[in-house]
Amino acid sequence: MFGIKKATPRKRGRPKGSKTKKTSTTKAPVRIYKGNKAPSVYKTEKKAVDKNKLKVNDIIYNLTKENRHVNKCALILESPAMLTTKALKKAGFTERQIEIPNFDKKDYQGIKRKHKNTYNVSVGEFLDMVENFGRESFDIAFLDYMCTLTGNKACSPKEDITKYYKYRFPKHNSILAITLSYRSKNGDVIDLISYVQNEARKFGMNATLLQESFSYPGMFVTFFNVQKI
Ligand SMILES: C[S@@+](CC[C@H](N)C(=O)[O-])C[C@H]1O[C@@H](n2cnc3c(N)ncnc32)[C@H](O)[C@@H]1O
Image (cartoon, rainbow, N blue to C red; front, side, top):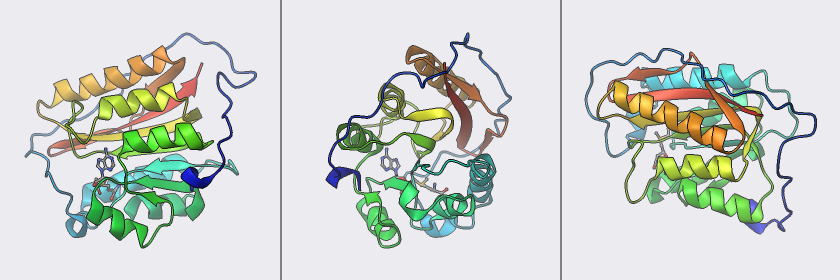
């Protein structure tokens, strides 16, 4: 667990030998459908058989299965149905390589029973915790939010995304997957893509939108390949 390890400063800056490339903005199409508002509480039992969630986790599996790193690490938002954990394990991640923050007490307890590296904190608090005490960088971060990009008091996707880059957590060639609910369809998707790509550039990285990104009623999920430049 991060919190009990003695802090060892992580290496910062660009990895040796990485080239400085001009940033490029890939605009893969994101299909938007009309739909209802996102649910405010996560309904684990229903979602375990929700075809959209199964599709998302299939994509997560396909995007990570080629990863041959020995010391890989994943940061995910998870529910007690453990769909994302199952997808990552199938792709070759071990239990210890998967880190799960969850700010909802009930969901946290349900997950903690099945997965040791689970913490009852928000994503933002988790990122601060790793920055202060850990020494991780991530092969994949799946921020499977249930709010809009603007968020609310408890959940702030924008702050989390900025912290994720600022603390230099993405490995070169890593996956950043983000689910959000939308209020105004296309506008919200475009805002997220711009935010993720602009913030990446600010911190010397490129975030390329992948064509696996898609939307379903009330929600959209975007996949980015993050490269250090
Ligand atoms: C959508 S579910 C995860 C589903 C899972 N990835 C799947 O594909 O089946 C999101 C979970 O993350 C938690 N969560 C949402 N936003 C969070 C945040 N900012 N910090 C910590 N936990 C959060 C919720 O309580 C919920 O249990």
